[in-house]
Image (cartoon, rainbow, N blue to C red; front, side, top):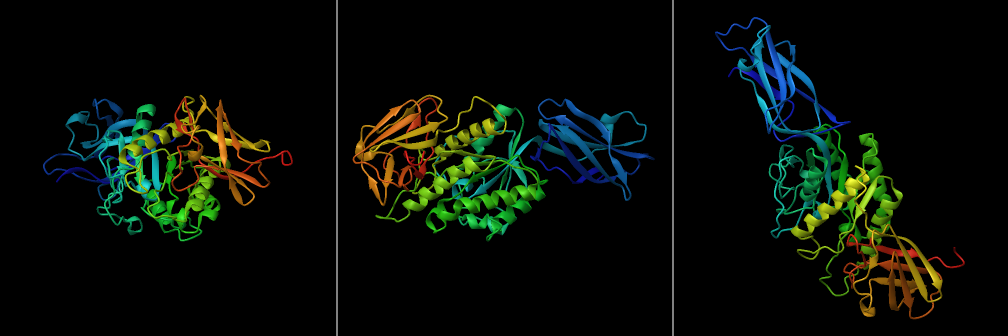
Length: 463
């Protein structure tokens, strides 16, 4: 073989993280001059073309020649794609570049934004039934084998995995993040790259470097191998901690994980999170309701208290088994998360967040008034007339009080209690593993309110 050979640099399907609209792509290798062709002063040229039209984005540029018939180059490539990288070899002064000696190429390259997938099974993707969520050019995936590919389900394919730490024990299915990336790709107009690092069943301790940290280290190794830059982290985790006795410390340990990641990355990288969906209680009296409510509340508080944390609800989405989202639900969740990302990272004002509890006040001895913000339309309760299937729980002292009516208007809900509340008073919504009623929604967006648990109710003595 003769010509120009690429020995390091981009691989087919790779997406590069853009900074201020550009990415620096390094490449290099060696060249071999054909026998019988007079090339006294060899020159290696490299260019970038649009793959859809063949139009040059960067015309032929001279690479640096190194001893031993080697070459290298750095190209500043604008956001966009898909691109093709071409190389060729010519004699110094030969103007006929199109007939240079053959050179290696790289195909389907893009410059855009990278997101790393982290968390447990609903991040890894366990939706097993059919749903239309096809691959799309411009949405690519760095798989577990550390090679780039067109993104397609299952994302967490374990074939030739380079990191035993996140090797799945079974074949995975659909996750939310293909839908997420396709939505961003269409809205932003440039490629989106995904980097896989999740593992089904993983507790937060495996992601927190101040605890076990094995999956955190594996994730960071993967990121370093892909240039060490990402736009954000896609995080869906917490089911295990809701049931392993670690729920009470979830907020502080998650904060440690985010802080360590940002310190190592040298930037305030956003985290895009999904609040836990339901867990079907397959045993009577399964004793984990409190843990699920505590983790959901910790996730809600993380989005309120830690800068750069976004959250979307999943509690209204369908399940394919006792704990995993259906493939169709994952399409919806991906779109929700993309909308949150477009709002919080790309400042698209049309995207509305889910309503969140702003205040809970005892306006009368037997009335708790809840205020939500933001609300695009009005708060709507599916089961407002069904007292025995109310989504809320009011705690008074050490017991829960019956709710005899729920009154909905604009961005408020008034809960009328069966008896006066005593201090301390707390309120919860959607806190159980499997809440008995659908949570209210913002009627304009039909996003459910974020679940909350044991929020203190203010009284005249505490206001």
